[in-house]
Length: 608
Ligand SMILES: Cc1cc2nc3c(=O)[nH]c(=O)nc-3n(C[C@H](O)[C@H](O)[C@H](O)COP(=O)(O)OP(=O)(O)OC[C@H]3O[C@@H](n4cnc5c(N)ncnc54)[C@H](O)[C@@H]3O)c2cc1C
Image 1 (tube, rainbow, N blue to C red):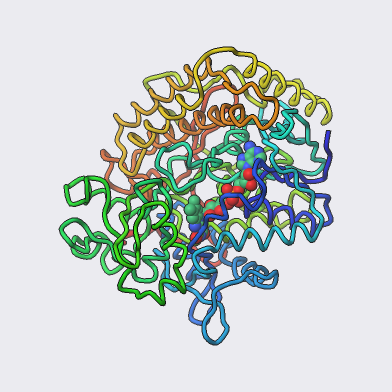
Image 2 (cartoon, protein in one colour):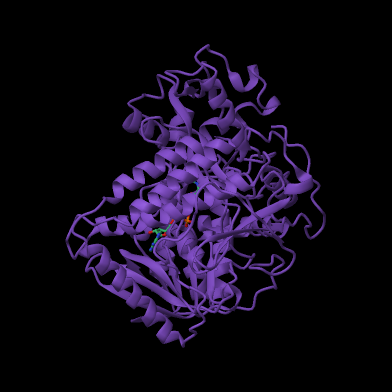
């Protein structure tokens, strides 16, 4: 068994920042990650980082844009914390050596991004995430923080009191991909989940194959609520071939979208007033799909994004990476031709419920980054707001897990404060896959060591059972069916029949999973086994997304419902919460917090 004060699960932007903070606070911190940190998906981030750094800009304006972008479903204390702390954290990155792009006078460059009222997106070419990861990883190495890479964390070691709010997390269980051993990691102070997104729930996504939402699923099975899971961001400019992202920076720099009739449809068909192509992502994605569905797309599948008029010099200076992506993944020379693009799954706004200090309702368990929902993005994330979230809330979670004195959070977590019970009727019974929950509420509370030993034992049994089956169905078949159903029914446009069909398909995937088997018998580097375990997580998360989408009968941000074409502030200024305490999901709600430190944010019509 390994033992550290703080265990950070995940070595992406959020995990690295959390580990550095925990170390700064004097804790012995370690990172446990299924990938080497610099292979984490943060490395794919292209466009940039929002922070109010310049004269003429302000924290208040960044906070307002973020709240408006969230369609008034973000929590003001979280949004204000993000916008207040982002500038000092960007400066910290600069001091650590992040190679930001610069103006002639040496100041850091900032570009316009969708939904921002000021050009406040700081960047390093179109490879911002790559540089961010390397800059932070250097700090991890410099500090001698232990990194266990190629360890797949599959279970949280939590006590199992009936109420999640009474439980404690004492560590994690991980499968050493190199040796095939299942090992326990005891965290004497805290565990920070920073496992990134869940794009693999869909078959057309900008996310890497490693983005299987393991952190959300593990927390969910330990009793931590998942918040606002229906809010999935679809990015309007992904390559049809692979889902590879063409950054919003292209539109920020002046790239234009047009349809098969040669119309610059964002303006000519009035989708977003004067915002045009730099409207928010949900708006542009819907506009593109409307064009395609009404027959003005190319090959009934995509529209065109053109940046040729920006000129070679500017493109090479600011968007060089885009040229390589378009050439390598779509065979298009973007200096000479427009790029075909269509919407693809990109980001999960919802996630593991936390407060501003990254704390969940389970004692000793924290979450940060895309896995967490604090909630700054509400119903729609603005481009450039995820990266600052990683370091602002990664840092706070790291400090809190290390036991630093933090200002008391204003956001309540768990079934505390004002809540409302919910109900949802579904055509199929949902939930439960072989009773494999991390905490079953049986109340067999034990000391930390026994809790960890029991968790390790259960994971060894699970590995042996999966490896022991000689025949069955392969995870890839289940995954493919699930992903196809999610892309078909729980996409940009949603309706009740489709969501019910998705839940039916998920139920079928659950049933098939009972007979899943691992083809590869190897003890070492058995990625077939890892992917089999990940597939179970994808099923649980697909269900959480589809169920939450069915419950929310209004149109807000990224969640469009055919039968409910209006934002319904009277009934829906609240977060959708899903808890899985006793083997089946329960729905409940928590009111959104619109009261900030200085002002209350009044919901306004979001017309862009
Ligand atoms: C193509 C693309 C471009 C983007 N561009 C921008 C941008 O320009 N600006 C912006 O603000 N946002 C951008 N985003 C969003 C942003 O980059 C991500 O939300 C963010 O980087 C996620 O960081 P993270 O640290 O939460 O997760 P990740 O960077 O994905 O890291 C997750 C880590 O968890 C580990 N892990 C996962 N599961 C397990 C497990 N079971 N056991 C052990 N380890 C595990 C992985 O190994 C990895 O180290 C972009 C997203 C994409 C997909």
